[in-house]
Image (cartoon, rainbow, N blue to C red; front, side, top):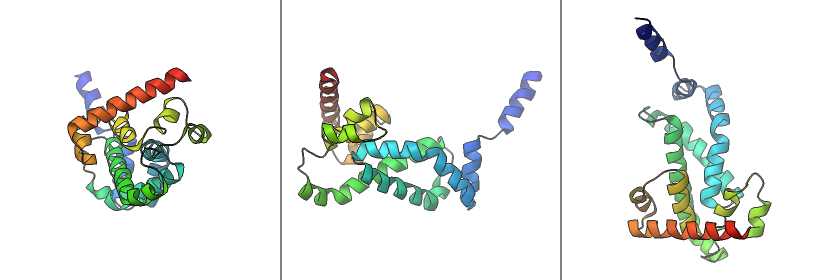
Length: 186
C-alpha cells in the first residue's frame, strides 16, 4: 500500500521543464525566458557543430527561439521537450544552410565549408572533439553531428539532407576518418 501511495505522489509531480513549457504555451513570457536560459547554450552548441561558424550559429540560435515561441503549441509532450527542441534546431540549421548555400559557395570553396584549424582554435568555448568537428567539410560534418551526436539514423539523415542512405553512411565514415587522423596528429 505504501508503494502505491509513493507512486501516486510521483505521478502527480510535474517535471519543471514540462511546467515551463505549459506556461509558455499559455503565453507566459517569463517562463519563455527561463526556458531560453536553460536551453540556449545547448542549442547554440548544436548550431555551431552543424554550421561551423559562430556568427551563423548565433543567428540560427536566435531563429530557433523565435520559432519556438511561435510553434510551442505544436509540442504535444509525446517526447521530452529537449528532444523536440533539438529536432527543431537541426531542421532550422539545415534549412539555414540550404538557404545560404549558393551565397556561401560563391565566397568559400565547397571543400572549405568547415573551419580551418587556426579558426577552430580561436573559437571560444570549443574544446577537444568540437574543435575538430567544426573543421570537417560541410556534408561530413552534418552527417557526423546528426548521427554521432544527436542520434539520428542514417535513413533519417538521408531524408533530412536529401541524399541517399549510402551517401550518409559514406560521409559519416569520411568524418570519422578525418577526425581520427586529426586527433592522432594533435
